[in-house]
Length: 155
Image 1: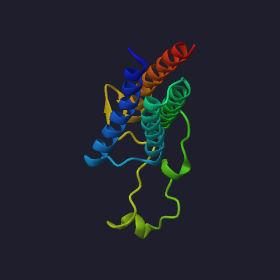
Image 2: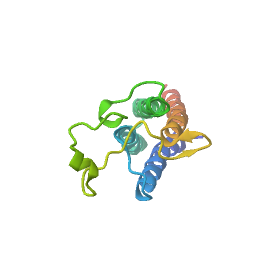
Image 3: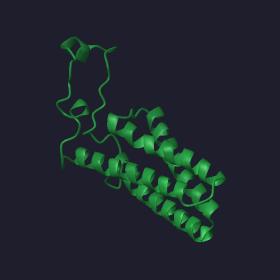
Image 4: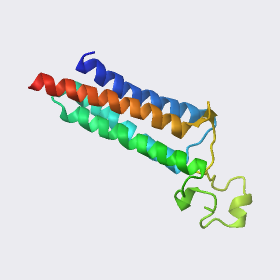
């Protein structure tokens, strides 16, 4: 595969994961705080991919691989929080009622708390966070191959 094809595949993969996340959100699965954090590196990877198509060299694909690894790490961390392997952020886990009053909790119009330690959907035993981690590792590999192709052409 060419460098260009690899970059389109890697950035397109991040775009597809973002599209999937927003589709699930539209279907009634609102994201928790950790879900949102996992989206930001994908946004960066899409932008990096667009730039990397215009600018030669390995620097931008290396940045793309860093973005993919960041979201993979966040996805793995979120999986651990969901599975109870470690404590998650207090603002979105089990005891996270924060400053909400009893009236807020009973109100239909009150704030909706989306818990980071609850699996909202899973396929083959893997949650959305887990699938994000798996696919993001694959995208990281594609970015690294693109960077290597860029470096060999520059040499």
